[in-house]
Length: 348
Ligand code: DGY
View 1 (cartoon, rainbow, N blue to C red):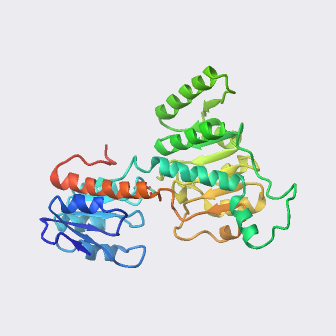
View 2: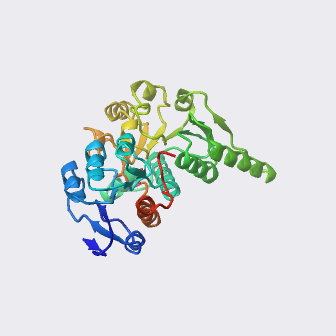
View 3: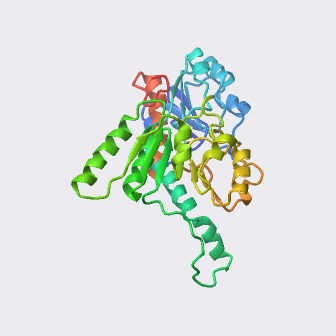
């Protein structure tokens, strides 16, 4: 699909994206926009090379694509200078290769923080209160009356939520769980978690001033402290060499037997084969997963586990956020082409 065919700058989007603002931004600014209409979900490097062609100023790409030297050098040869990933995570992008080829890389931070944290909170509640299992039970016609033992799960109030990775999304999630469910917090992060600490300090003062029960919070010295102490653990790190299989058999073994583990970051942060074994051995242990090690696939056995809630990488999938992400990709690409600031810049 081609928009504004006479535009001076050729911009390619490897997928159609929600909303129209991103299209208008590009076409109102002298871009000829070509949106790939290929039906298959994941484009190969060859598919994308064909889209780049001989002349291309910028590309909007997706997290399912492998943006390495082959694509960036082709984009450079085609005269391109700009690439934006439609995601905040950019583990699919070799930023060094992009820079080597003179291509600026953009991502979409900010607009997906609350939406992603809300999905992590939804997974927490779904896993803790066995919502999906109970839904399936109802639909199968198995409900034949109230029972004291039916789908007993975990209460969140007064329990401890553990957050690993206290950046934007981890902090928003922590805030939701503390404020919404009066959970205590333990978190681990390599960097300062100023945003989160300001919130918990102010919230603590608010509770005190109103004579309400306090919540506690603690910055853990090690990740193991979080895993040992928390009743709910939510993972929010970036994926890189240091966080690959962060959750491994040894770390699973130190978690509480009835803990809830949530992952809405990147699949390879968890050793999924080890997780399946752990779920089999510990029926009271529950997980809520938005992401998987080999997307779009799940490791064998995971789909059979009643103590797992699984959804297809939809953490940022609210209309407002997806339209915002699309808009930011357009701003990123335009920024580089026209010399405006690039919104999300992993090099900053
Ligand atoms: C991201 O932005 O990194 C999410 O995984 C998709 O929104």
